[in-house]
Image 1 (tube, rainbow, N blue to C red):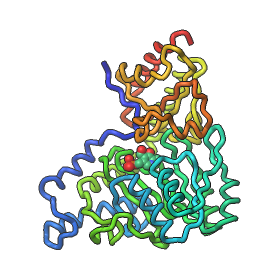
Image 2: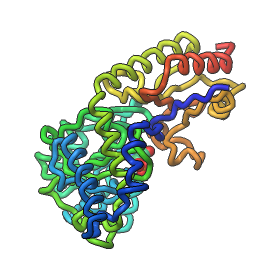
Image 3: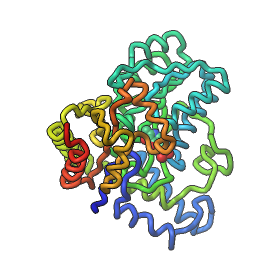
Image 4: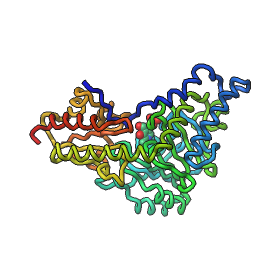
Length: 380
Ligand SMILES: Cc1ncc(COP(=O)(O)O)c(C=O)c1O
């Protein structure tokens, strides 16, 4: 039986060149970057090289990059830090955010009595930006957190428009860019944003490592207190092997970005056409069927109601050797359904599956998947 991986929004396979870049830190160069002796200094040199590389790919200065244990920690740090540093009175976000944002702002709002406004979204998951402007006019001491690329339905936000509103009204703007770092150009010289986050395992780097960009004019306190690592912005010995791997993965991603985008976009396009031919009545959730307004890596498919597969489609795919997902990997184990599809008012009778691709996904894998799906929907 084949083993087909169509869940790249959950995590991606490690690039072999990334593994190679990480290996020296497990053997020869094992010093603690905070130690002042030669072993420590050797590790420090590599740590700062990685920081410089990531900063240059985002067009920011190295001092604006803080290494973290991943996207979740980076989101928590940015949100809680901005709330405590800037006397935030209102948090504006959306019901489509990843739980690394949504649960943080919900809890902060409850604990600290800060107003939380979740913007309205339409049936396609487009966020109401007029409402954003109205809310900002009412209360300029706001924290705005809106994601760049949605991990479930792929919707891409207009970060330039959001940042413009935030700048006009003096709001702090954080964007969860976990699904777009490495996949889209992010020039932070052109885009006025106060904090963004990255997670290496979403672009063929290792798990458990990420970064937070914090605009130097909008400093925030650390979330994790401890030693003076990361210029007092994140306590704890840096995971130097993982950080070097992340820098390598980001370099590879950026160098070949246009080629990867074209390759994966063509594959997504092909999948859409094959599905439409094989299964009449198939739909695409959010904007994921629209190549210009969604991540090229994500396709969220709504299958027509079918007694034979009811509630079991992912299980049938798994039995056929295909790994896909019903939503975010972090909550799929909870079996509560997707909060994103619920916010869109998706039809509960339909079976929704997120397929997500990478540059390692092949046309043969797509063909096999469509054949299996056709077998599960024979009468359609
Ligand atoms: C949009 C988004 N934000 C945050 C995260 C969390 O990142 P990490 O797994 O590195 O904690 C994810 C991972 O699924 C994500 O897709």
